[in-house]
Length: 268
Image (cartoon, rainbow, N blue to C red; front, side):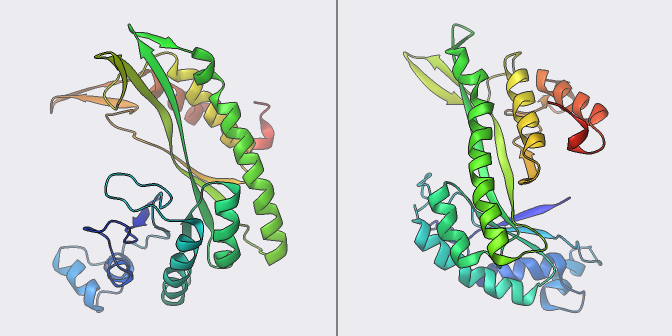
């Protein structure tokens, strides 16, 4: 199911505006006789895509590259303006807001709890590799337990908000970025790289995280591995005509084949 993240404008050079976001939404979901719908038709797509899931912003709490760091209050206030207008124009979509810590989420939900359907979370394990061997293996292998404890604490916070707002469709978490990153020792220092191959120690980490999502499915409504192809992917391409399955491909394959039904059916 498609999910689109809207550029919220916290990059000084390439920041998007609410007006641009509304045009994107009209292009994707608008009728063929709307302004942007006509452009979509001119580009060869007659029917709306009918995308239901839209996120406002991405990691607004961090200064990545030219990305401007925002406080929880700044983001919550900006989000309210965007979410209020978007929901008014598109009442049937599901809106996601940027989540992080208990304090951050408290501020965002206080202002936007009735407008949002999900709060995002990003979880990255980091494995250090030296001489082709994992270092401090316990930090990697027990990381899913630490992540699950955090999800549970955020879930308790959501319980309180859902009860307070008397929501029939409870607010949930969207773990829309997660994986195990590698930091490889080279040139006398550890350097993060997306090109380190997936290894066998990635298998229990990925399985551990999937198990945590299943156990916490009361709170986790969406979980998207990044990236499925190349980089940290399940499949790596070789040139333009070949590809191979990585070790974690088989984790997802076996889960897909064997985990059917309800989470209460499994003791994981």
